Length: 420
Image (cartoon, rainbow, N blue to C red):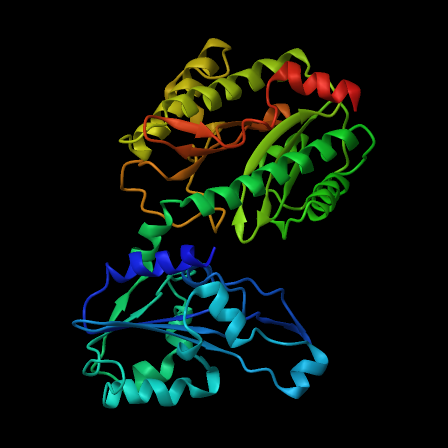
């Protein structure tokens, strides 16, 4: 596994300017209240380049005219930490995971002095002080300062001669193309999601509130070895399912309604993203079935349409046109533009270390990308919301449905629920 992360670094290094240094921090859990902290989530670009799930680490990559040097800075375990929170990762363990030699792994207390030496002499790095510094300048919102600028403030304050570059675009590009290792981790996440959804279907007739079903899913995927939900579960019944990102999950269940799930499991930081819609009664009524089949057709035909060379714009139009045509046939809409009342999101997105994974939507789809296909219809006046979502690998000649084993045909759903 370690060669995967070393390979990711090598691919990134090819895209860097010479006479540059890359600084990436692993992040830390934000403070919650009194002595409590939120659960730590590894900064995904740091994980992509190292494979580590450790707080407060720093990755440094130095590219000179002729050489490349990679260093890792980790937190040293104190006696207090050892007694209260346990051992931090050792240099040996970090080296085994990252393929960075132990001789190039230091403690965080050494970071300032080593970086000052680099900027003053370049001694030991085979270069004069770098001209460029790469940060991950991803912004949560336009008004928020990127995390890296706060974390490496002393660098930008002291060394104003450094020209700041944003490495986010380069890593985002690389992360679009999934390796064999990544596809294996994603398939595990998808397979665990299938087991979780089967548990939900087994409990569907016995539950009275949405939160119970959300709990059934989390319980099962945790038993299967998942890190938990890959994003906040949407468990929406009836009219709640017409709200795209409904997360309250506290509605009472009406047996005549449909139940929409948008959920996924996380495995080694790689996520799945699946949507399925089930009848709470165990059987679709005629109206529900008609609308469900429209969404299912858009889902299945759009998956067939996926292949290298098509644009996101073309894929979106293809799926939307199916919904328009079928909704006209049943009289739900008369004009094309009316579809926007019942379908108001994209056909899908990139998937990987993030649920809405990084990627460049202006590029054509290419082999190795993993995307979602998720058409839907949301008819508030009828209390019906339907979404069907699968995780799709773009292959050399077309596509592969990684979630094909998660049932979605009407007859299969009804048959499964009849036996639950």
